Image 1: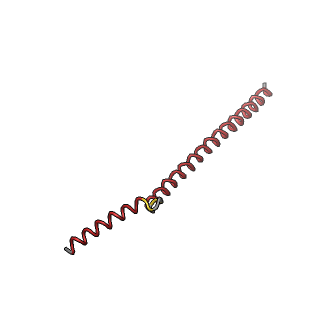
Image 2: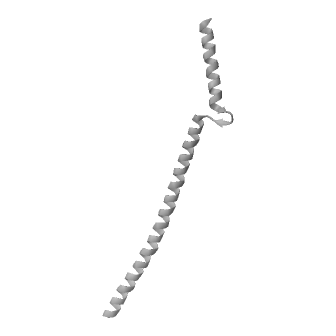
Length: 86
């Protein structure tokens, strides 16, 4: 009889613990809160990575524009030097 009570008591405690873990007074359990925090952290990291990639693309475009200007200036200078020789 004592074993039966112990098993029944243990099962009741587990059931109540699971019910409390799901939600306590409209507030998520600590486990759920940790998962939410983890998801928020991952989303924040993904957003930061996106901003980094966007900024890198912007810098690459600026570099290409500046490089094209320098190439044009170089070619114009070379053309001017060759024009002076002729």
